[in-house]
Length: 377
Ligand SMILES: [Mg+2]
Image (cartoon, rainbow, N blue to C red):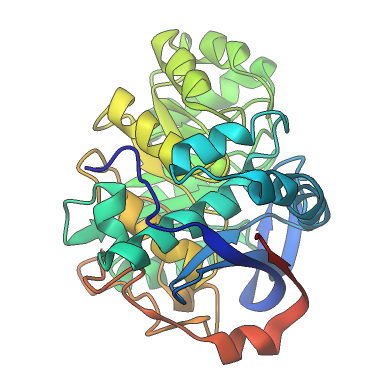
C-alpha cells in the first residue's frame, strides 16, 4: 500500500467542469427532493498528456453539508488554485496539507485530491485500486432508498432491489416515516440486512422511537440526531442496543476516532469527500478497522463512483456500502461501461489502468453547465 503517493511530474493544467445530470427517479430525503445530480468534475493533466479525473459531489443547497456547488467552485478557483500554482511539491499528502489555511470545505479539497490520485495512477500505469490499497476483486453493495409516496410503494421498491441482488437495504426515515415502513419491510422480507438513515431528523427526546426500533434487529441507525452533534449520540447509544452509525458530523480522521472511542456511535459512514479526501478516508479505515467503517456516497457520477469502488476494495470493508450500479440513478453515465451490480449483489473492481473504465468526454460536454481551465505553470 502506498500511503504517501508522490506524483512523477507536476500537474500542468486543471479544468473544473460543472455538470447537471438528470436522475432516473427523484431522490427524496428529510432535506427535500433532488431531480438532478450536480457535481464539479476535476480533470488534471500533466505535460506528458496523462490525465487524472476526480469529482466534487456536492448538492446545490446546503442541506447535507454547508458546502454547495457555488461555494465549492469559489473555494477551488479562488483559493485552492493559487496554492496549486505556487506548489512545487510532488507528494499528494503534502499538497493537501498546503490547503490547510483554507478551513473546512472538505468536498472542495477532496475533488482536487481525487483527480491528483487518479493522475498518479495514470502516470504509474497502474489501477487506482493499487494507490488506494485495494485487495478485493469485488465489493458487496447495498442500496439507499429515499422516502417514498406510500409504505406499499416502498415495500415494492425494496423487493425490486432485493431481486437485483443488493445485499443490504437502507431506507431514509423522517419524523412520522419510521416504525411503520420498518415493520412493513420486516413483515414482507423477513430477516434481510436492513438499516435506516435519519439524516438528523430527530432529537434525543425521541429515544422511545429508537427503543422501539431495537426489536427490528436493524444493522444500524445512521445519524439519528443533529448534523453537528457527536455527544448527544452517546446519550442515545447508551439507551438503545442497535448500533448508531455517524455520518454528517465526521469531517476528519480525528472526529471519527473520537466518536468511536467515546462510544458516540459504533460505526462510521465514511464519505471520502466529507472527510477531506481519500487519504484521510484510508487513514480512518486503517485506524478503526473491519466492522467499524463502510463507504457512503453522494449519488456520485461514474467518476466519483469508481473512486469509491476502489476505496471499498480495501480489506476493512466487510459492511456493504451505498455504492449502487450506475442505472440506479442515471440513464446514461459519464463512464463506459457503466458500473454494474451482479446478480449476487457485488460490483466487480475494474482491473485496468487508472479508473479502469473510459471517461465519456462527449457525454460530459452534453451535460456541462460551465467550465474553467487553469494553467498551473
Ligand atoms: Mg447518511
